[in-house]
Length: 382
Image (cartoon, rainbow, N blue to C red):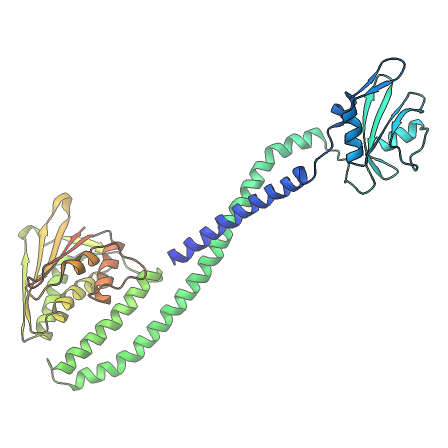
């Protein structure tokens, strides 16, 4: 699930980046896609009136010709006293109403700009349909309010854009995980019934019974692993007398494995009443999985030790070890590596559940072994 949410987060960043890039590209097309005509304030400086006529910089004509534009100066009486490239559909005389009308961007559908000069009004126009203009009026008090509100609106939009897909995706994933959990629980229930019948009809301590126990443990680990991994499990937070639980578990194993396996407990005196806060079913499964790990990988038998010692800062050190065949340094390195969602260690699903329980309760866990020299697991509990 974390990987999928990471994927959604990455996609959102990509989409947001693309949005910014698109805006920049559109701005580039608008500003630089076509060379813009200089502002009329700059153009009017290229026309100088000396009292008897107009001296026009040649660059002014070049700009007008390049854009198929025209220019004219209208005096205070409404007459055109100077013009260049004036289209035939542009009048030669203007009244006050005419000036008021085209000063709002268009003159006979030609987009125009105006500038007031000492001798009249400079009008620079472009061909019809060459650009779009529109007059917008905003109350200053409203504009000031917009300046204050717009940043918050943009922030809210960004937050919605960012979190809404995550919430929707998380809901979809949780529904899917719940369905998977229910399916696994249903299948596990269907398997347990015939498995119990088989276990009740076979000889105690036989090969068949041991294989049935393995299947039963596998079903339990599958359920637990799925709930821990998906976050769909509901776990109690209870005070557990750890020594009592350890003795109960070890007694069960002594009764189930009579031949080849010897179990020993070593408890410090000051740890007899030691308690932890956790779900007893999870702690039981973690310990049982470690004991089963020793049994599974030592089919010819071994000595298994369970010890609990005091540790610094009021914590306890739980050690489960055996003197069996052990494992390689490479496998131990893999077991001590960080737990990944798609990681199944060499020692199987049971060890994965052990690490998941330890991670849930923030227990420090360490696996140690050498080939032919046994296997040790140390867990700092609290």
